[in-house]
Length: 185
Image (tube, rainbow, N blue to C red; front, top):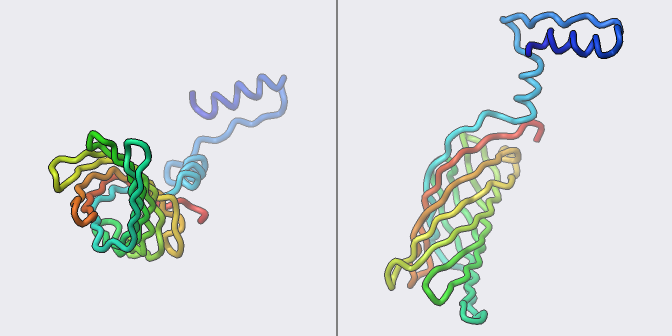
């Protein structure tokens, strides 16, 4: 249904109120309704891809929880690709007796994205399993929750996958997904 037809129906429903049908938009001008929708949604989503690697463990705690083991770790690392910079992360891993594990973590990144700088916060979850006595493989999702500086309006969802060296506790991860800047932030 076009906008002129819809307005006519509304005018008839209002029992003959004085309504003038809207004019069709000039093809050379932006559609105000579409402009408002674009503003509400933010900038277009763009592809994001790269990798990040933990480079140093700064704290670790291990404790039993029934048949499981809980590992809490903080570390430092670097990230490259669409997101570029250094990060700190805090993670909590539940390791099950069968070698499977699941993790929740927060990454705080001093990043540059498309020439814009700020601090980003990502929250992530993953699941994995030991693939050898020395390595585990995992996959999950990271969500860009917000940031500061030029990155305050950045949002996105990234699929992650990687490997963790069991002896060092350090992981290497690839990411891919989409990001966008919200308007009005």
